[in-house]
Amino acid sequence: MLLHFHHLTKRYGDNTVIDDITATLDFPHVLALLGPSGGGKSTLLRLVGGLESPERGSLTVDHEPVPTSDKSLRTYRSNIGTVFQSWNLFPHLDALANIMLPLTAVHGLAPDQARARAEELLERLHLNGHGQKRPAELSGGQRQRVAIARAVAIRPKLLLFDEPTSALDPEMTAEVLEVIADLKSEGRTFILVTHAMNFARTVADQVAFLANGQILEQAPAKEFFSAPTTETAQRFLAKVLKY
Image (tube, rainbow, N blue to C red; front, top):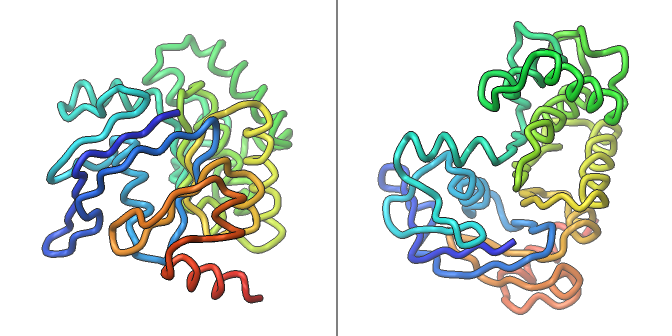
């Protein structure tokens, strides 16, 4: 997977969150976006996913420009699977219906085909017996696994994970991280924003370190964690890996 940013800039009011980034990120399967809170990681992820539009500059994903028109954006987003920290499941639908909805409403699958694919994913993600439960009846880890199943069900070319475990307790976090690790073993391509440093070190092929709206360095994960080159990254890792 190849990402290219050219003078990419994103502002919210007077706050510049992505500050004139020009960079190329090349990774076989998994890219981890790491850095301090407020550094621009989630915003950059949303720009890649077509969920936000830049004020200035452009970006391409595997040489395909992320479009700007509404119609083209809808088509682009239909091939991106996104998992947020807050699940974003429809509360009035059960787990099975949450997974089926994008398959029927966006991708045009027949209901029986969508059901078969959703039931297969529920089984793979150890959610047997939970398909008829609404989100409020599921644990946090189960909700996040349903959200992952929904993202994977559309067979996207790229998965985006935005802090998928930040709202979970340690046991549930382990459940979800195991699922994400399994996705890598299946050869899925994804970008991960996370504060789980040991997991990022294990699962990522490449790391991009962001702070103050800039990509300060990028390197293979093993190289980044063993010898970060910038003082900001050195201080960050010393702090988050201390305990």
